[in-house]
Image (cartoon, one colour):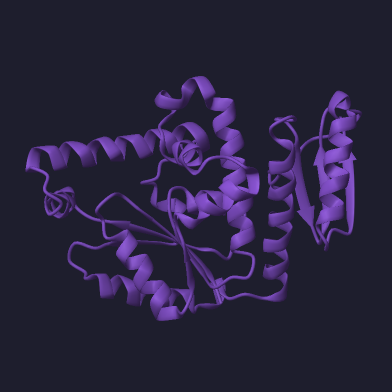
Length: 269
């Protein structure tokens, strides 16, 4: 049982590899259905969420606050969807959205620009147009990840495995990923199942609060939620109603405390 994230540039065969891994292992695969579920859960149109996760900051700059709210909705939904394991997620920033889980297998699929251009030309684009579109998309994704997460998607240290698919086939990549997923570092234990549940609680409460209380931070360990907020927020009636409702609606929460005027842990969401 494992959680696997597959990051890729456009036309790098990452989608095909992700589908091959999911089929080989018998895992569920998550991509656009994340948008569908988040849309229903938080009552935000799918196209709006898609803009939040794909549009570079320059396009969405005036709405950067709203963009981060939508990303919190997506993260809360994704952590809930992977809670039972046996998942392959291929989509933008999966390795970052789930970065607080140490046992997630994070994979990056790369390919030379010429190979990617040739694949895009199969869709009817000229060589010049295919090249321009891919370069633009790469720059777009890089700018997005740097602005929101202060990370470069091409930084190999963000991944457990980087596979260049130029000399290798899709089947080779699937083999490597499936072999790696079976290693002890990525197997699920009772403690790791608990970690996923804790993160899901923290991200879920964050998503419930963020639209009204943007600066609130949250941690969760063993079902104990700690909320870090300013004095004014902590005494807000709406804030209290929101956290009380969340606690009532989510079984498995053992305790919920609000802390003010203390340092916020680095792993808070």
